[in-house]
Length: 154
Image 1: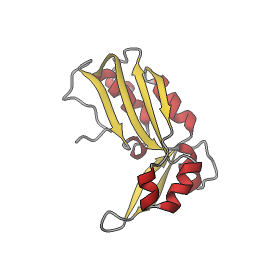
Image 2 (image 1 turned 60 degrees about the horizontal axis):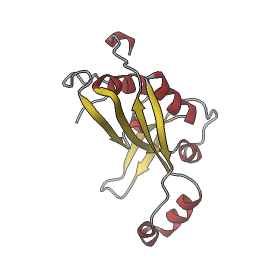
Image 3 (image 1 turned 45 degrees about the vertical axis):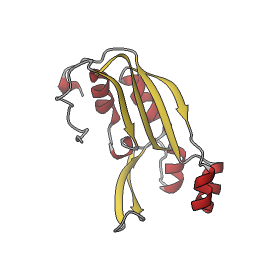
């Protein structure tokens, strides 16, 4: 467990083959410093794989005056015990993609997963919605350049 707003000082440069961040990035406002840190610890050609709420879905759920603005939003989480108001950040697709390019990554694959039949049995209304519009997005990106930069640049 680590606060990604701080450097991963316990990891050496080019010491990791894969960074896996499932549903983590939605809770971080500025992705470029985090992606640059991932780039620093990854070996050349190392992989970054992450999933997130789809920008299209997030824009539908959290109406805003400006789709292109990165903004903090909140969603009430239920089903995990006590209902919790969970903050995250809404961002346009270009902010997702350009943050990767600015940090030395090339996108290899984007997946917009669809719900399974098992999901349909448990939540039929959500199944119908997620079968017709994306709820999540998965990205696999490969480190293409070294971003060994001074910490104060990030």
